[in-house]
Length: 116
Length: 111
Image (cartoon, helix red, strand yellow):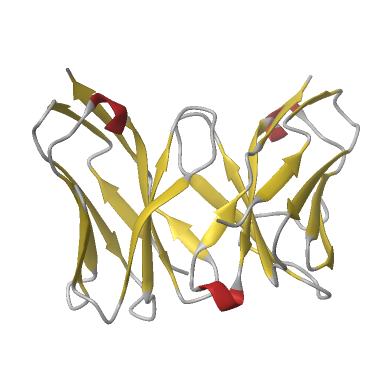
């Protein structure tokens, strides 16, 4: 099946710094990537939809200036958490959607962000 | 936007029994309904999906049913095994667009 990688898997940063998370589709080109946030024992909350070469579409309540998304190529999307605060600590998961492969989205392994 | 509700939030069954998880959705335009299994700290894994032109789909011990009129769909796991223990999420999507997840069901299969 299609493989999606995410880097880093874990990151600890100090409050006020920025953190970049990369999501890569390794063996296919993804026209669309999704970014989710998951709190412990809770569901995946869609943050934004990222389409290659265009601006990301953010869900209501998600600050686009806080969570910067760039989808510069068909295999790479990045999420930058700017001026991170402890409340940004969470599990961030990306997924890649293959338009020609049916409707399935392929998930990355997730990134555990801890802001101290 | 789409609102997906999922019940129950926790479910315990004896090994060998069946488990049923139910979801409802609000947007009648949704036409793709996947189910995911997520183990602690890991990525969600697709276990079965159904499209709106199909009422039921089965894959070995797992089946999904869809009622478009009532806007609900269900996951059925038969002959449960301890390795089925995990959190299960339903989701609804308009093909290729945003996926909206249910709140999750923590399934425990008791040996």
